Image 1 (tube, helix red, strand yellow):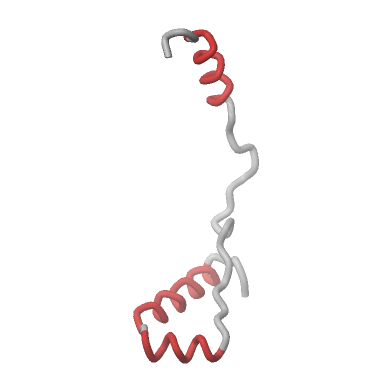
Image 2 (image 1 turned 180 degrees about the vertical axis):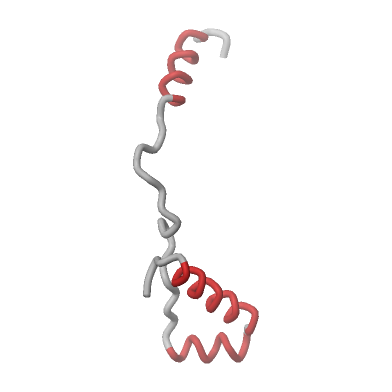
Length: 68
């Protein structure tokens, strides 16, 4: 590691110059969850807390304007 201090310095400077130039959006990487009817029924019967999380996720996304 001590053999190439100038190379390390140059690489660190190169990496630190990277940054996002596009405006971030609350909806980036966020999509509505739409399980099939059969899956919905199964989830409601077997894992009610998870069903509530899906409903909350979809409600939050709609409130943020990510989908209608």
